Length: 561
Image (cartoon, rainbow, N blue to C red):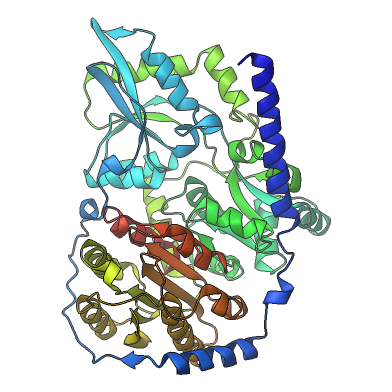
């Protein structure tokens, strides 16, 4: 096929994407009003459904709760092979680099992989040996966990920003900077045209200070990503704290300011995709994203204004640990190759190196403060409002064996990431629904009952997923009468195969009206079915294989519980 035809096809594909996603954006609120019923009608309808379901209540069973004094991070992490190699080494002497996804994927997100493949074909050598590099795509937060725990340690690391490197250093991991910037990028806050205009008119400027003040005042809905996993989320967290107290972002002043801000944040997204879906449906007026992703999305760049914030995302490259001098030379030669004129031009074509004149208004922050900021987020994100959460567990016959064991192990392991001032219950379902544990404050007694209930689950029968959800919603609805300021959450752990009882269409309007987000965790699952459940109220749907479900739930609970 000649270049002219390829160009025509590419233009057509781009036009189709713009039409499709533009349609999603422009029609995101169409059809909502006729699906929404009043809370009173929703509660009444729910009560009738639950009466028909007629759930049973299990006898309470306690099990000793034993948390290790030192958390075993390595055991919670999946095998490193679950993270894809996106550019493969071609020689015996090579350096493996863990890279953040925005440059280690495909298409415009595949710049580093293309550089690696081309570098490997050049025939460079060190001390007479041919050399190459290998790129493994690993989220920056997860890469930190692998390295700090010692479970998997690469020769080089290229996270989105230096914040992760600072945290590694504070955790005792030695690093050596090979390149301060492999490719340039900036984190930013995207505001709808209308919201951007309102903030400009009221505050005279659009920057992080004005945006946080407007969020505090409840003038618009702002979202950001999990600061334990996301580079932009971590950046946003520390800069928000510094905005309240630049000299001491951990002070009482900073904490109080963060609590005021956080009170008007609808949710912290587990993933960027979850956050973008919420924005497309009109649930958010502003959210965070890197400039390279923003500029490559025709719909976003047309409908949202980008305001840079915080520390630059200049994708450094560091050597990790005590690697050989030869491997350091491999990393240095690769960094030099990525700095050539052709490499820089291609990076710019892919949306990188934008906003080169942006200079952070903040000074460097230590890794110790960043680690403390994450802990501060965990304890202050709910601003004194407890979470009322019910876990809905699939114990149908299709969950027998490894899926159920994975579910049990992951829930028991993840208990320690649920704040003890939250209120937690447990429901199981097959053909019938059982309230395994009524909602109660997650103190040591409730934790013991929760663990005992999880350990006693067994698989048998059919799959009435939405019956289980109905019972859990009813439990939450009644608990909210006692704790009206609490944040409701529902977690469905299933393989997604519903074959009895209610359907999603039967309860969709109840979910929409009661606004209970339903996080779904799939075990070898029918993911589309679970995603449809989560999509009703913009919650996340997790594809959790038996290898990584423990780590996935840890991230979910750190962000949400």
